[in-house]
Length: 274
Picture 1 (cartoon, helix red, strand yellow):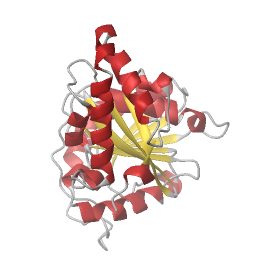
Picture 2 (cartoon, helix red, strand yellow):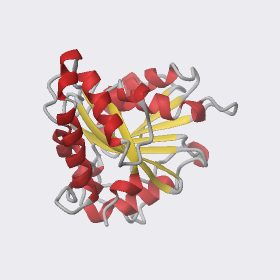
Picture 3 (cartoon, helix red, strand yellow):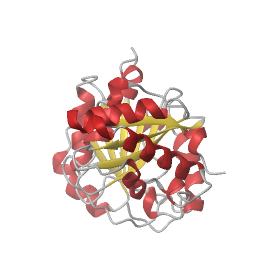
Picture 4 (spheres, one colour):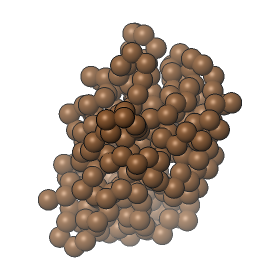
């Protein structure tokens, strides 16, 4: 995203709210996050009401992530509308040839999430956006975006590497943060704490001894090490066993079905900075 306004205010000129970010993007970069979203938001998207609106906020220099989100959500509900929002007008102009109105649109905007008729989205995905902000700005942006959600809406905000092999994201409802999900391509993963470099801005500076997220990753590494013998059956079996061991001491919010996807979701309250 790109703009001259701060996240906590909007200029009197009505300019979009946000600050400049790099806009790096690659095809299939967000496939793990999208897969989780289709699972977590499926019931909301299928609710028997008007076609739901989903937003890809800050899709970057190329529109691939919005195009892919649209295709993946249409597998959940065929008439879902995806709106890609970017502040940089040049990025919006470049994306317009990929539009498929009314199912896929692109428009200029920022954290105010401009939608026709004041529509409230069922989903806002903000991937690799807030990582480039200061930590003290995150709470205000979260509050603003959560305030734009439909009553049953979901905000997914997080970070991944350039090729989409390692992700960490926070899921929020209108009331605020709910969970943190860790997701990885398990082949080549030496230890779960390698995901620490992809922690969202709200957590990454708290990965120090004595803080909850550091304790969680330490315990995850220990569980991973204890499950090493299962590595003979594949990294997936080792991951599942490590997740099961963690469940004894941490409030996990998923189970083996999701663990086998290379995911683990834990309650936000257990990792929240304090």
